[in-house]
Image 1 (tube, rainbow, N blue to C red):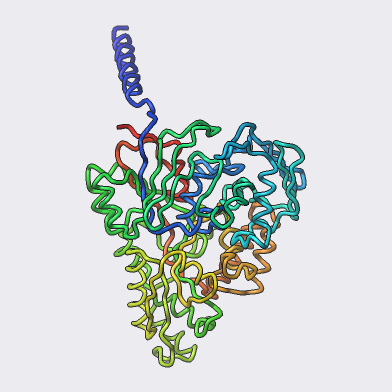
Image 2 (image 1 turned 120 degrees about the vertical axis):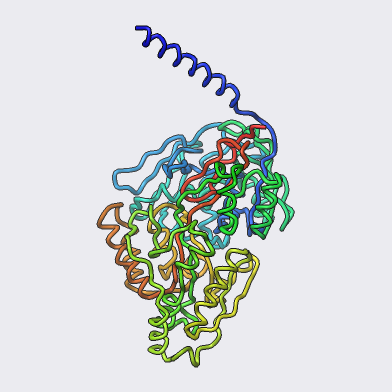
Length: 515
């Protein structure tokens, strides 16, 4: 009995200590949350966003019907609940009342009708209009009811809706600002736009009327720092509170530093880093040349030496975690096979093969990877010239098909194989739609079109497996690695987290500063 009483006493004392500790961790309002991105966002207009830099900034300003939580589960945002018809074609969303745009006007179902129709309108020239192609009709039966009718059932439709082109915007502000809406955005999200000094800084302030409660911090400052190592220097000086992409060259040092080792957040991401090849530009219109390039790249060396084992060698197009992912062996590093393929293509030892251009956007890590690939290709007789560009200019050139070889990464817009294999390789999506390689294979088109209409499951996944096998054989991409996010924060930054989509999805309205 005495021993039992002692246990009870100890437990009571521990509980008191936990309560005291908990009181010390009370969430605080106020302060400025500072971060950085490597490039100026191309736009903050939800209808035009295609990159994670723009998305990270804009998602603080705008809201949609639903969003992902940290586990990629769909959760309500402006839609408080919804129903789906038995045939899987009609989605009815019941909206929250009292949600306001930053200009003070209430958000209604008609605003969603306008926002979605604007993306669909060819005059908008939205690069994500293809995301709306499955929709037959959008309507507002009442002030707080938004209804979507699909042409065919889409089992992944809800998973698409957190993407930026589905966010709600106020018609009057678009009409008032015209083309400037993309640089002076007005939304309904947790933060209001304040200012944007291009190539320097974006400033946002807390939306104190936010329907879910005002953010904890008063302001968010997002600096544009092109050099990742400079950004880390700024972070270590205390001039940044968190940073979304620790460069691999700094990762080992930071992981071994007692001050930072517990403040690095690493998570597998639904994304693939790759070298794209424009299949319409000679000599890359020759499948054998594309295959030779892929076999000539030493992926293991890139992952170990440049990325410091902070990522996973790509085994295909689809990353682990995507339904339909197939476990495959990595594409082997085989320079001798690359030489045989070049000879078969009519370029023995690379003779007669013109110098190819490999384009990439400014980043120290991208440059090191492209330099390594340049060296690998030279060993088999392929000469490559590196072309470095600003992000916005770079994306436009890829979309227009003006590049030969190009470095890109694809982070899932929604966690489904459709977002990789249909968006990136179906010929309907050449250029701005996502197919930057300008690749076309009728069988891949047929398989990915058919899979869109099927419910999630084994039968649908088998179609994606077949499509991915064909794509890898055709080699419009040389997949390099699957992403792993590497964010870092100051010890006083609390409740900072993000989903498997990447650090750009962090819900900054939940973050508070314990200082």
